[in-house]
Length: 157
Image (cartoon, rainbow, N blue to C red; front, side):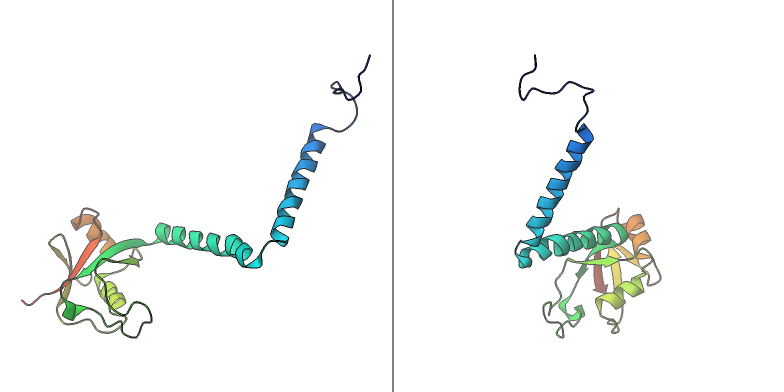
């Protein structure tokens, strides 16, 4: 004797489990599309495009470049950032991202914005002074015990 609304036994023709899953996924995707289509445009594009782009850029930079904290010993050696809109003055401890092949000379050029660095400016880390032709990544790894704090100072000798 069959009861109305009772579960059908296995092997009975009708809707399969996969058909039910397909309709469920279709309904969920439709609901997601409707929610996106009718949502407020100022938030939906930020959530869909801007946040993932920011996360991707940050992660990509962390995976492809090395970061160094740069300190400058004296204020007379600070680079001139007065033409910038936001960062108009150098701040010690600023994080600079460099490629693996960057030399000390290229580091100075990046900090001073392509202008000539003051005379006798040297880069050091934990008491070790680097030459201008040294690779920054290799020098930090060898001399600084992987501590990426670089000091720019003027050598008066």
